[in-house]
Image: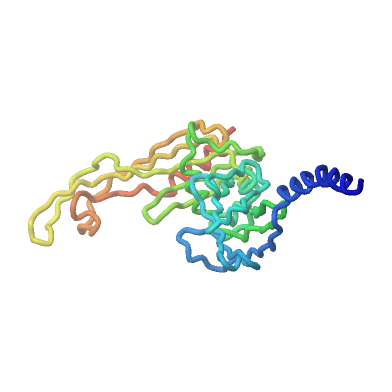
Length: 293
């Protein structure tokens, strides 16, 4: 009788124990995320060593944060198969194991305009390392220099590519002007907004060759007479509604004709001499335009 009871108990309990064993994933020691002061990876905004016991010390994984298109992209290399990256921020998603976090919206909307373009800022982003046993590690991203990536994002605003994240603009317009100059991108705020989310207009300022103003005659380094066109570098200003991507105003500025320069400039030896538009003119026009309803 006792043997029969034991057999019945074994038949009932064994499958249950097997199921429990199958669902019980091995416990692994949680790692520590240590952000580094400098990154060896090209174009990385932030990087961290992931350290700990066992496999963590064997693999020496590292987190890197980069800007790509309109996202912050977090990558773990090498990434153990039992780990996923996650974030609670709206719009965060996994793509081939990499975590993509939209730069617009919660990441940038509350950032102060006075500092976000020229110094590292605290984005409030928390990266989560999720283990397959249900445990996790949260790591707050350190301050990062977002300015160049945000400037590129603003320079791409169009009807097909708006920035529709939420934000409340002050009663008067605020324009964030993005000017592509030879030395890089220059950003200027015009209006009362103090945070990125309060901006309602984006102005893209671009320079292109305009009309030929006159021909300038020189004697070149070989003592030969030479004529070069004096060309205006026109400035086109297009103002977009940030949330809708609609162009609300445009204006073209051309350089004022002037006498030919006394000397042949080094940059113009092959094709032309150029005359720049006074950089104050587009800013003055934007200031007047922003003050209008």
